[in-house]
Image 1: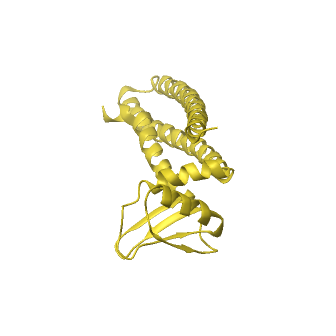
Image 2: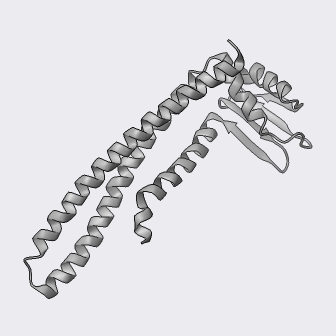
Image 3: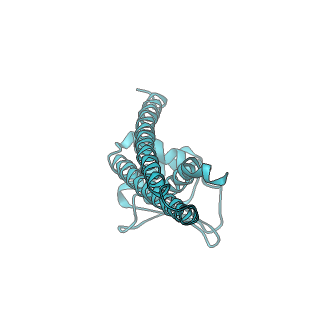
Length: 192
């Protein structure tokens, strides 16, 4: 099986998993919004019976509180969904076979600068062979330092630059991007 076929298969599976999780997230968020909107309607009906002056003030406070509660509930659910998703991503990264890991490292190596003065790449013993192959494939010749305590993936260090491609850092960057996008989607109506 050609490397491109493997990459395509991995990419297709990843896209399929992302679409599935995105759909689950969308469905969950729709349910939360529907439930909270029903709750808002219920709260508004209860306050309409009060005197006009008191009702206006109570309604204002209730709406503010309800929005905060809705936002909190949505944020909690978003956090739960994203936590589960990224735990799954972390597990999938740990389960990569050698070909998949090689492909990942080659992609990551291509993002590194062509050369940096006094730069070293730190990696774990289990990733050393794959990293050497990926660097060679990318035409890079950095010194590699193997550390028993290194996280899976690798880190390029120089006096002025640090580029971390550890699995934890990759997931962290993905999470930041996705959380920003999700927040924009969930709360864009608040701008109006």
